[in-house]
Length: 431
Image (cartoon, rainbow, N blue to C red; front, side):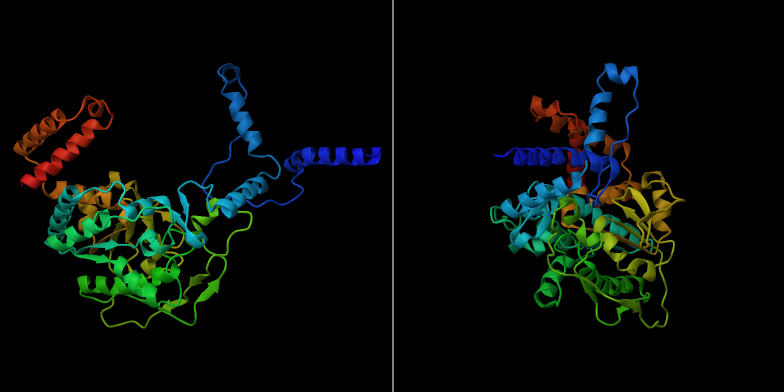
């Protein structure tokens, strides 16, 4: 090997070593921003205390590591190799299925019936739900439960081959819907509807890179949901209609890309196209009004606000969305929190609910175990508070249940809360 070649190789090696440093300092080349939710480390404050307790060094290391030149390229390259060679994702909570379709792990577990609540607990929850529905109906306020479809259930044939086949009738979805039917709960289930539409629809109803219904699927859902709400309200609401052909594009919005973006691939998979219907106001009908509605739901509710603006068009400006029954949002296209309203827990529940013309609880099956995000239990306790005798019986049931548990179970931090919840469930069954 000649001296020239040796020097050239040494020069290339130095360039490889120095180029990331130069890129970090001068940003010679534009780099794409990583997708997903994360917070860049800030420059740590140098102080004797942080030096002595070894807090400064890790913070500085993290700061420098996150600003290494070409870091995004290196991460995307690693992720791309894992995806292309092993059909796996480096993003947390993302499952890669057949044909490269991606799923969120929680809905997959819900479809498989992992950690299902069981018939007894579902029966108790639905009993409360039915009673609350009756309580609000007596006050002239309909409550409709809406079940959004689960992507893993809708596209179960595209789940990874190694996953087990779910046992029929064991999942929360199957048990809960069965109980709601038996107990007479008024609900709208989009799971069978999406199955029917999926067999004939011109476009997919779920995005390749997202976990929620896509804009096209949300439009079909709204076209079914709004007539159902009109029946409950006994009055028409303003509608949107499709005008012209939908926009079909390879680029997806945040809602259609919420799983693919955090995967941070070097060559983002095109998947199947994103479809965005073009909408315009439908002709007004006699007696049309925009009702004041309370939505309590999970992230599927966003699909009725953006990119498709059904909620802000159909309902009164006073309408609110209680995200997971925790945070208050204004129905619009910007995911805007209500600046004049505190967290849900600080509101007067009775006043908030009874000032509405309609209440809609919208969720997918992964959240059925939450008891409608605790919303039903709060209303039930509001309208049916426990008497002193009731509380004494619940306390007795707690002691009986606790006495049957092992020492190991009793030492867990959430043991008292679990015993209390089980005692309440047992008490409800006695009523």
